[in-house]
Amino acid sequence: MSETLSSASRRIQDLLKLRGFDYKVIELPYTTRTAVEAANAVGCTVGQIAKSLVFRGKRTGKPVLIIASGSNRVNEKRIAEYIGEPIEKADAEFVRNTTGFAIGGVPPLGHLQDICTFIDEDLLQYEKIWAAGGTPNSVFQLDAKDLPDMTGGQVVAI
Image (cartoon, rainbow, N blue to C red):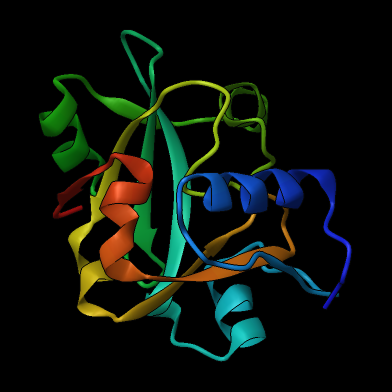
């Protein structure tokens, strides 16, 4: 674990503090890019990983963030019903331009643009969950119940 955070992780750490959350971003010496890697790194179940997945509206091009349990897949048709248009997975350039972070390190907050956000209801079955901290090897643990307030996201079945 690094004592000095990268600029991306520091940005998330500072934002958490600014918003009144006492969570600590940690950087690990190995990747937490996938839900399985993150779960192995922190010693939790894959379901306790809050993976931030960026999609875009097929007609409008608007970004959509899905914070999904690491054990779940996103039902794109269901999300399309919520937003009123089909969605598609965003490419790496779109993700970075929209969030300011690389795929595999996108945190649930602190993005460059306001993003329509949906939270997988399955995450709320856990007391503690883990989310990306701004890089593909940084994470932070949080109380699942804080995720909606932290992100402004809507809790839904994904």
